[in-house]
Amino acid sequence: MYISTYKRVSREAEGTSAGSKIGLNTHNFQAVTVDIVLLILTTFFIGLRLYARHLQGLKYGAEDWSILGALVVFYCYLGVSLAAIFEGGIGYHANQLSAEQTTLSLILILIIQFVYAVGQGLVKSSICLLLMRIFSTKRFRIAASIVMGLCIAWSMMTILIAFLICRPLDYNWNLKPPGNNCGNQTLAYASVGVVDILTDTCILILPIPMVWNLQMPKLSKALLLCMLGFGVFTISVTIVRVIVIAKTDFLDFSYSSKGIFIWTAVNYGTGIIVACCPLLRPVFERLYPKSLVQTLRSKSTSITTSIAGNTSRKHSKFDRLEDVRYPLHDVGSGSVGTKTEIVTVAREEDFLRGQSRSHNSIYTGSKSTDLESKLEGIKVQTDLVVDSVKTT
Image 1 (cartoon, one colour):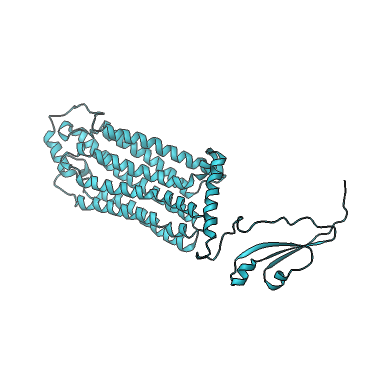
Image 2 (image 1 turned 90 degrees about the horizontal axis):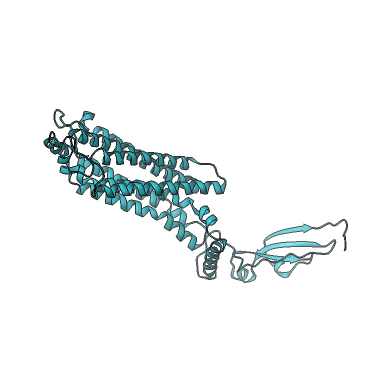
């Protein structure tokens, strides 16, 4: 990236800095620390995700294999990044590096661009595949497939720019090429960052309408949306990364690129973590005390019940029947030869208002009631035939 001026400065230092000792210093220490922390976190969250699938007794799907591939590629990215720091001189000024060190760092930077594009493409594809598995309507699957296609196209665009922006290819690392044969690198990599932000935004917005229309307690919806909202953090990191690239001093790229290395790793690593978060509920239900889970569920039910009690709210096509509002009754045991009828009708007050909400009313005996004769409903009649009765 933006290597022409950087190589010129490196050539001026050639012959005076050969054999310079490089390694960890106070400037590149932050990048190394971030790499190690993200290595641990991404491995941990992938482990939790796989454990959640095990608890549910589910086989790995395409989205799981995709995120596993992204983790493997992330390991490769971290390896190349650390090699660029410890062997390529990232974190040192250009005039402190030998020609061999500068060439190595430029080759590794090209590899980093390739690995980053492949890995991010796998992360984005994994999220899209997961959403298609959760929301299986035809319209949503088409929309998710289009977004996933855009993500794959972004990944291919990034790779092509990395390898074709300079011709011949060795101009990316050769310190003495015949002439400047690079395109507008500033515009090229700015476009990569902008499209990256757009694809992340599309993935974030895609499931929101489906989640909001789900028939579940408001609290559960809010928690699920907050979990998906972690994608906002990923978008923010991508924006910061683009800004850092734009502000990097490419006259001294090896020294000023610390921010690029840090935010690229954070962008990649948080994408993996965000892709795992929506699937971790079985793990928390297993690890947390049962009383805590029941408390959360009871709070969710009470909130839903209070909302259901408000007669002014709008009803959707299907409404949840709460036990508190529609209590269950024991059918009771009848005598030998008696008949039990279970009639499902509307509540009397709802019927008088002309509403159609269903309610379970239970009647025992063969005699019909006045309400039963007035209302239409679903009647389940069970005749009990007893051959013998044993008494003790």
